[in-house]
Length: 238
Image 1: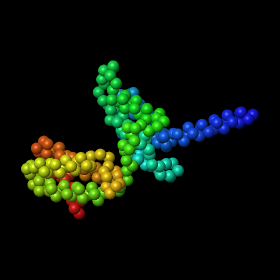
Image 2 (image 1 turned 90 degrees about the horizontal axis):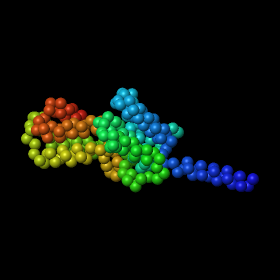
Image 3 (image 1 turned 180 degrees about the vertical axis):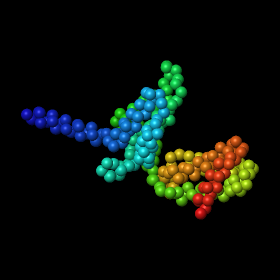
Image 4 (image 1 turned 135 degrees about the vertical axis):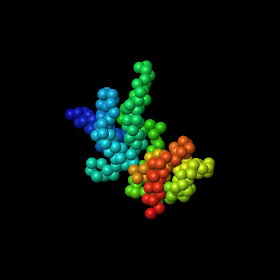
């Protein structure tokens, strides 16, 4: 009887350890499984994601990309490096969903990502390659002061060029534009020791200057870029 009791206690202890050892939050796992299932369904049917499926992924992305979320009980949960890596692998899986079919003997990019995603989901420790790779971002409503200041500086540099449709741009101006587009290219940026997540409003402004960069490479300012630039200029200067 004593041995049976000890066996039961040992089983309960191991079950508890197994639960504690889980690196993936239950809510996050459920949502990840749901998104992977719809991606795999589209892949099997050799089609793109439907609008409804894209919207569901967008909801998933917005919930988890910052690296923290409110769980079902309303508690704030900060994601670990493995969970943050999984979010990016989901994005990669969708990116390679409609890649061209290769040779049967070659592993596709989609399959490579799928394999790594599976390894992440089954991991019992955080891979060294993910440790410290992705920050936890602060979500910011509106236009962040640093982003606004940097954008206004760029507007001051390019204002005469854009408003007169003047293509006489020197290397200094190009370098300043390159610095700006490189700084704000990613998911977020650092300001006063915090990592700020790029929201849709800031991203849309960034894309205007990304378009300007493309125009300058083509040695031509396109009308839609000029008009969008004026809209950003008026928004930030008022």
